[in-house]
Image (cartoon, rainbow, N blue to C red; front, top):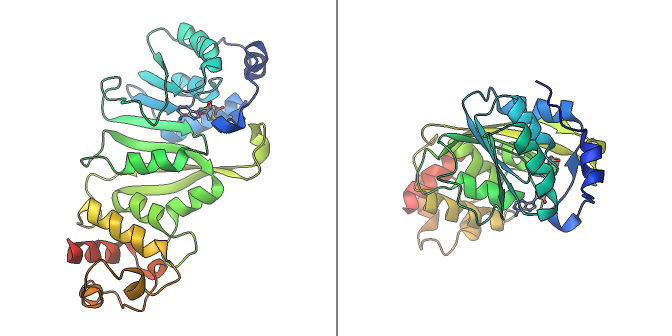
Length: 276
Ligand code: SAM
């Protein structure tokens, strides 16, 4: 459904929304494109959606048009609020705008679980938000999918396979408890202003259970330490975790001379169990 709201270029001019670099503002102005991104998360009928950083509201409009029951849009920049208010008026009862920092706002109570998270993320806080969403206190999490725009290089780290340069902490954290795929890549010209690099939309769906058993905190610690010195052999990179780290690596089916990027997800989980 097409809404009766003005084109985004007019919205930006009317509210003087000159993009601020410090807020990671690269806006999507093509409503066909925002509708396509919303559809990656869909179908949205009857579903609540959290959107971080709606900006002038292009993606917000796509999410509402795709049938979201309710969108909670969390925006830090007060300059965007009048434009978002206009959208809320066009979609009564369906858009809640929170003028807040997504890093500190507690969204529970605003949305019915399981909600979906859909966002063209500000690049400066994108990874931090993703890691938080991937590491809730309990699993399954209160969301069932994440549809997120990142710099392409970050997207590739999330879906990376073992043995590749991009494989690291983000891949292990994401793929341990989610299916993750790159759903769309976009050139810089898709945004205003254009960023320096390509972007990509990653779609993650939460699995009901982790792929392999492991204690989340132990797994996070081991993986962080292993990839922190990714060029070193694991017996050196993980020294300090246990006096008999070589034996524990072997018990987990990992050669102590291997490097972090050679170890598949199953191996990291087995090692976390050995160290629990
Ligand atoms: N969704 C819009 C679009 O696609 O055109 C804007 C995306 S822009 C990449 C990122 C947005 O996140 C900006 O509107 C920015 O003001 C907002 N933002 C930046 N840091 C934020 C934070 N910590 N919490 C909430 N919003 C934030």
